[in-house]
Image 1 (cartoon, rainbow, N blue to C red):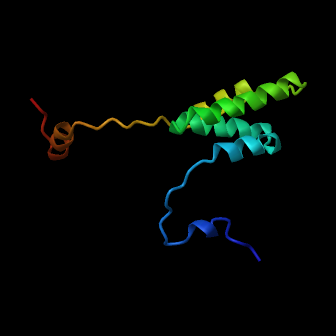
Image 2 (image 1 turned 180 degrees about the horizontal axis):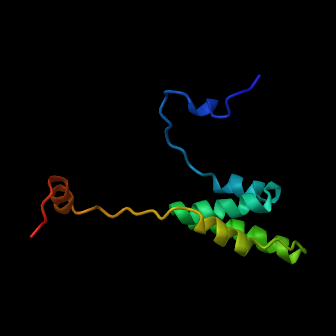
Image 3 (image 1 turned 120 degrees about the horizontal axis):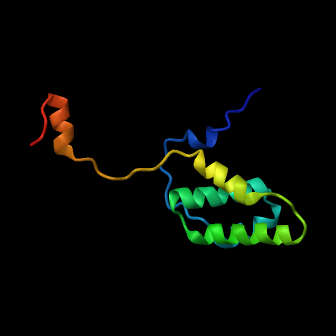
Amino acid sequence: MNKNPFEEFDSEEPIEDVKMDLDLIRKNLPDYTNEKLCDMIVCDRYFGFEQKISSVCMEELSKRRQAGDAFDFETYIDNAYKELPVLDFTVPDIRSILAQAIGRKTK
């Protein structure tokens, strides 16, 4: 029997007050894979969450490197970030959009 991996998100109830628990994240850092730490850094940078997440993940990756881990996290992070689409939150000029829609040029 295949279980729907998104079942927990199928609820009609709104999600309220979701917060990241930095202390819990710090506690679990040693259990995370290098890739997960890098993905957390990429998400933090991409969505502009809290720089604290990136900092604690980078600290953990640095500790691992000093302990002899040869994982190239810089390249992993750069490549993962480059794969994401550019977020553009600029508001378009409504006048030019309307002019295009009706086939006229704005003056």
